[in-house]
Image (cartoon, rainbow, N blue to C red; front, side, top):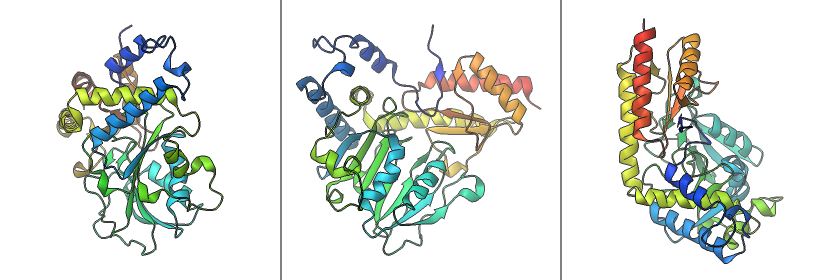
Length: 361
């Protein structure tokens, strides 16, 4: 069976090269006589896998030495609690609510202290990024939190908020490694792997060393302390070993593509094909204001729920998977992460064009 074009928001499409390599090594990783998923995380072979993965990620993002890289479990959603547990020293934090995941993180933070929603785009179904140039930042805030790319709603912070000197914490799950990033602008970045980097179950945390301490909220479990994992090189307990191995392969694939500057250029090219079509279409329309559009997640609608359902059904029959939009937006959503080839987007646009000619009004 030939592979489909998978536009899923996550778990999402992975580079075919990576899957083929992993398949070759499934039964015998480099002469060890076993699969990576059978291997002790205390073995030399596995230590080499995790060390190489970290070194490649550091190279890709140009991560400064005073930042730690942690490979953890629990997905990005566990970070909604870990961030306040570890960073909310004054028990105050400011949140910019631009979608479902920022909203969930905001609700979680309220369990640990005062969480302020200093800006929100809920008034227009999160279809834009609010002006963050002069926010009412609380003088006692320990950090300002953003979800940098909103998977469900297809918006992206193209300009980081003015945090007025406060620490910036960012959930980068759905834009991670899609473009170069200046890590020094953040105190902490986290990203669930299952969109742009690897299989579900792994989360990557990049945290400035001075933020890692024993001084955490009372009652914080050992496993939810960044210090526990930083001190043990992400091997305090058995980590998601196979997930980290695949992430490492994706990092090497990204290096072969020319790194993050090359990926950004490729991603812009892909997104332009789809947005240009949406902008001239009489049937389909994008749901996000132009200046805040994501390169990774593109929601669109026809304005007719029955026609949307027909499009999703016919597109699936034509080999385009997972185009149904999130229930809070409706319509369709194409997630075009790093591993989605440009041909996939071109073929989707050709299919949309044919659908419009057949069903246009």
